[in-house]
Amino acid sequence: QVRLQESGPGLVKPSETLSLTCTVSGGSVSSTSHFWSWIRQPPGKGLEWIGYIFHSGSTNSNPSLKSRLAISVDTSKDHFSLTLTSVTAADTAVYYCASHMLYGPFDSWGQGTLVTVSS
Amino acid sequence: DIVMTQSPDSLAVSLGERATINCKSSQNVLSRSNNNNYLAWYQQKPGQPPKLLIYWASTRESGVPDRFSGSGSATDFTLTISSLQAEDVAIYYCQQYYSFPRTFGQGTKVEIK
Image (cartoon, helix red, strand yellow):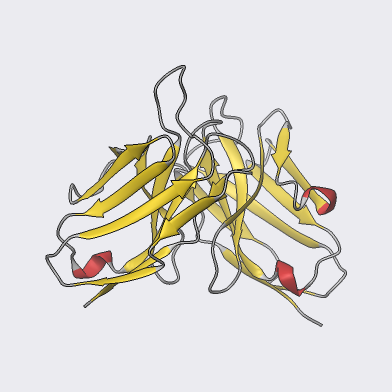
């Protein structure tokens, strides 16, 4: 099974930009069958799907975040990235990356990375 | 958006007893074209990412013990742990992958009585 690992700053100031990267191993972001998603979980709360990207660069995202969100992919480095602008305390969460078929469950997950929004 | 609602929010079950978790979707997640229910169940233990247990409502992921089973169709689904073990203490989530945005239930916490 593919392995995923999130990386990025653990602390972001309010109104600034959150940037995370997910590195894929044991597989490739250039897969023609797999899509690559970001999912987040505020401390002690449930799961929220953020959005996905395909190796072609095609994306789909949660309308609740779409205006602040960008997801990109770098096939040469086998990673994909998340950028969320104008963050507030409500964006504090563990951010996970995950893989899936377009119409399939999230079958592989990264370990997650906690991002705290605070001054 | 499809709203997923789980019940109960928490339950305490004795070791070896049955645990039942329900999940209701606000819209049908059954595809008439292939007769598949686009519904998955995940298990999340503290400090860990969710782990896929069940997909297509009733298909166990490889390596998942057979005490875990999923059932239901269209808008009403159930996850059953037939004989609760200590290692099953976790929060369980249902999730629909029928439409975007993908949505999860609020989670059900399973504890030992």
